[in-house]
Length: 74
Image 1: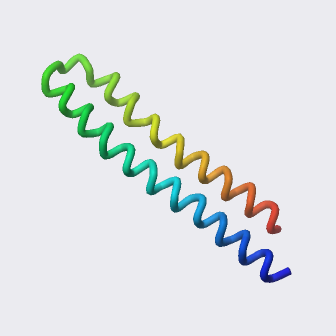
Image 2 (image 1 turned 90 degrees about the horizontal axis):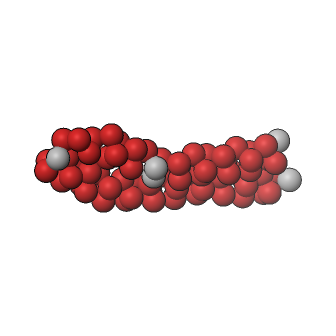
């Protein structure tokens, strides 16, 4: 039982960690493009802000998976 719980905990950690890493890499590119677009046209601030939020949903999905795994462990 302890081995199964440990493996589930490792899987939950990997789910959150890789999701965070992927979101960070995506935000790097999206942020650079958003700043470049806003430098040319200030009216694109709202669109750039919305596009910066979209990669964060990846982290939320990873967190949900970790919570589901944690609930299975309990």
